[in-house]
Image (cartoon, rainbow, N blue to C red; front, side, top):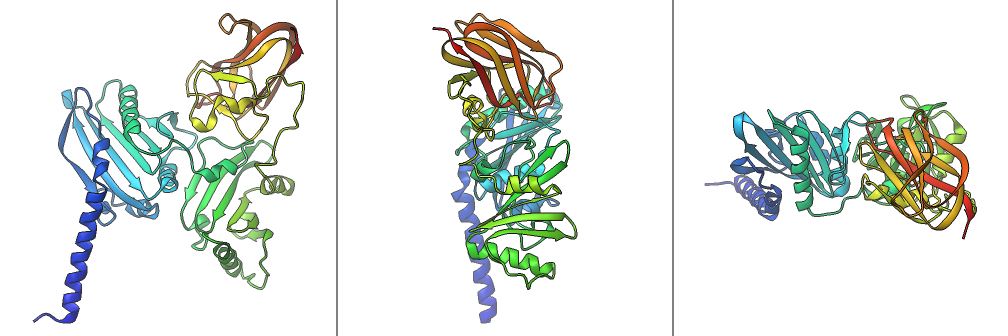
Length: 429
């Protein structure tokens, strides 16, 4: 005769089984995101994994994926001629922030060959990984001819099938852009800096030649009280729990990370570490997207004019950003040469000067060209020794309606990236 305890165990196990079955059925749509690949055949059935058995396929990394609210994995292998094979893994996480987060933990930072697939992706020999919305996709290949081209085509097909938007977590929009390092943003759901009381951290790295590398972060609490509890736990750890916590600025000498400067506002805590310069810390902590604009020079005839580019890295870095009067937004191209950005001034002007505000991904070699019709171009400036930051270029006044920066050689593996493209001249009509 079964005891109550035994009956409870049996019922609990049965309920867990039902939940797992329900999850598989509810998420079975994930199987439809695997495309047919010309010249390859699918092997066996698509294998799926849930949180309870993820360790069976990625035992060493399962805990990290679970920390990012992993929900389901589907795996399909394709076989081709002469021993060629391709394996596609599609991970689904709880929401887009977690999808970005797990991707940000595994990408190569500023080393990878980044590509414009999904929201962002990168290619290295034998692999192509990208993320879109709550999905993280990993594609690996063996003995494959034209590997990068084939994997890019497959990834593009999958990205087109996946639902959701191609955008980074919204909170990153309020991070300062000036001197922000490309492809170094991260989302960390728990244990930020190794402290169990710091949760939901969004981070970006910055670099100044005179101060070095530092990190700007935002901790997101579910409420004002939760943010206060994080700070209280931090002060207790540092044995400073007698300090009264109020909204505003808190500067801490951390035994492991040096000066950590923070501002607490409602359920958000903005902060920096690795930065000794107090004035620069203030500049970043008090940064306000809605108030931060360049001092508008009314003689800049390119402000808010029509603009086109040869390519765009993703929707966050559109060409319009280079003429919007902000130094927190930017245009960024695909990661290849050559690339260009063109401004239609609307009328003919006598142009004699431009100013380019470069992001870290600047042009080593580029031209400034002008045109009356947008088709035939005349060169007014060129250099093979571009050094980034701010370029102010003067030349003999020339009559034109269109002007463009034509990039020939990048300084990094990324594309060309401009915070602002200013043009100066007088109306000649």
